[in-house]
Image (cartoon, helix red, strand yellow):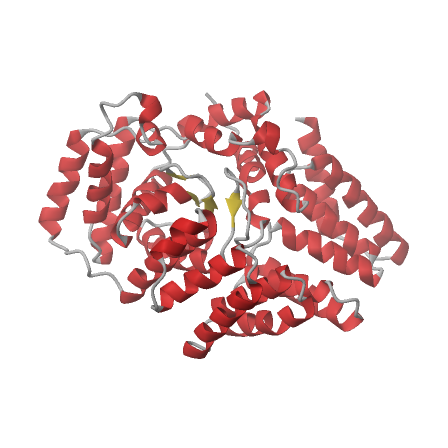
Length: 450
């Protein structure tokens, strides 16, 4: 069977690039949708990037999508995107387990085990599953996550489970690749072995009672024994990873619990006086709209670690969401100063600038959005906000081009074509030309013909 790789890559972008623009973790996040958090992604990238390097892949291509789904699953797409379900993180007991599963999924990417599933992706597109995904995306982008959820809820997780299903031979190959990558890094494979052992007890259960990871990644006793032999051979103990990995894991785990799980459960767990307890307490106070308490707790954290960009980000987010938009600018600026290569932090700052009806603030927003797009060129939220800012300036040509970019990355080719034509019309009036606008026009026309 001939595989149309260019078309497949567009399908993948259609599924997930739009989710790439979602806002940071907030008070209410519907289940089954992708979420963003700069701090979580930073730590996960610290785990992923070295594994990508030893696997012969480019770490700059590595991406993470965290899905608010309380089921145990993880998956990797052929465009170097890693999908982790919140339930998977919650099911782990150590950073070694997270790293082991990530290494296993990288093994699938490097081994091109996804080729067999391409036909299923195209079939899913024709069946309308993609429209379900788009419905969720549009709800997020519009600020109304309830839009489209009635018909689309669960589409994302269901589709992942359905076409990311591997053969047993592929699973064993990914295991061996994972142990090889980890051995090269001097990291243990114990975590992968432990995680699979926790799933082994589910093999005799009815498939509906099994965790999705087990259903999409067939498990055998031989697989676990093969990993055990590697663990015994390399003799790399747990606890030998870089210190920051363990601290990062605690933060990832805490933020998922504090933001996504019932407040009363997280409040009971994080009732102490440690830094991570106070961090969780600030998030929980924010979720319950106790904004003054949340700000007080964050200020305490900042006094202890005044160079932590994520404390300033949380303070900016609390102020923004509580209606104190002007006051949110300063903490967001500090966050960006301490971590200038974070597109999410720049987008947060740009949103605060855009709420102020001042020309210089609009100019600053544009600067930060263009910088964010250098890091994430397919961030649809950044393109949307940039279009708003350019519209405020009266720059209709650039505004239309930004809207064309947004629509293209969302897979809305009709709107992309319309906005690209509009951009070219405005540019023609000014005597300027735009190769990019014409490229989007041609790409949209090609997709609309398919």
